[in-house]
Amino acid sequence: MVKEFTTSNFQTEVLSSAKPVAVDFWATWCGPCKAMLPILEALSNDMASEITIGKLSVEQDPEIAGRYGVMTLPTILVFKNGTVVAQIVGAVAKADLQNRILTAIQD
Image (cartoon, rainbow, N blue to C red):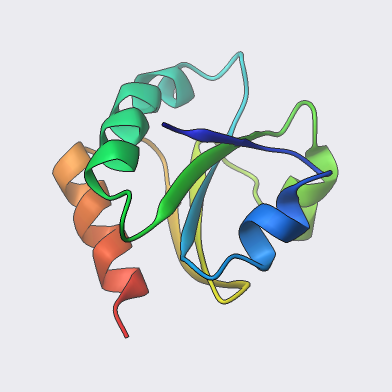
């Protein structure tokens, strides 16, 4: 299941997470963002033991998007130990997204 990240839980759920976290920055008006949701849902189930996957609305929490320089939607940032280790911009196929996430979180 894709988690919902907000200003109130971002520190705990993303930056302080012991497990890597992929954050999908999205907006309700963004068509490609809506197209990515089923892919993110599938990956959150397929990769549950390796990474937490969630989304953050840039409409509700624009300050977090600004902090990380998110200018294009969708943008997925992969965090490991509180640090961004990958940035994936635009809609991508499931296999491509999975490979890019796995590459980013490998030790």
